[in-house]
Length: 329
View 1 (spheres, one colour):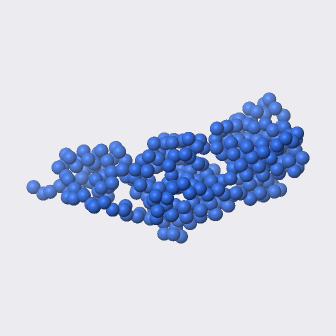
View 2 (cartoon, rainbow, N blue to C red):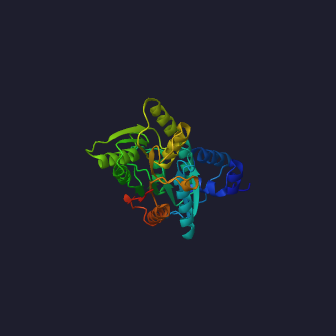
């Protein structure tokens, strides 16, 4: 009787030969349900690997994984583009996934990247809660795939991260508004327990200090629709302030929509300031002062950190903080 081969198992299980091989040599890098199916087929066919490979460093695939929460957000969309272009210059391919602000889709994206045996993962998690600890982080650690965080920080073990100086963003936004003599300000922010929100609102309050300036804060989310609904509800019971600080570009876009609906002219009837620039707003005659972040520079730092962790897997905890540039009106 002919000996059952790896190809036989692959054909019967409906997977590639490399996936079958990986199920035996590196099981942590194969999805649990796929691995179980392969092992069941192997048992049924009487297949056993001829020999186990000697322990060795995993082969490089020269592939990076990238997962972010919303590529519809220009910040993440452009950052993905710049990381991909920078990686190409170093001979790396980037497999990019959008988790669509979904914990389930985020976990599925990570599982796919484990299957693809990427050399490292660049990750912006869906949650801005520093205590967020999805189970896939432990899977990645066991699989020996380093993780570099971007924008949103976690306490969970990782190989380092590149973060925006949120306290500085809020402080400079506050100073800008104070210098123009505004006494009634509103800030529209993400969730109250978000580290990003805490940093930006703390900076704003620090800038105001003990000055006689009224500041209201509407907490919502860093995406368009929740911010729009939260601000609309606030305006049902409050007058428009003299100035509004949008804590990111999506929030500022929601503010602009409500200005349009209420017949309010931005920068005349109410002065807007945005953390993150609103690209091409000048096409519509809007000059919105903002904190602009150099996404090309951030992408380069992210890539350098990812490549360093591939070369030195034990490297942990390197932290880079990036300050933005104030763009006035």
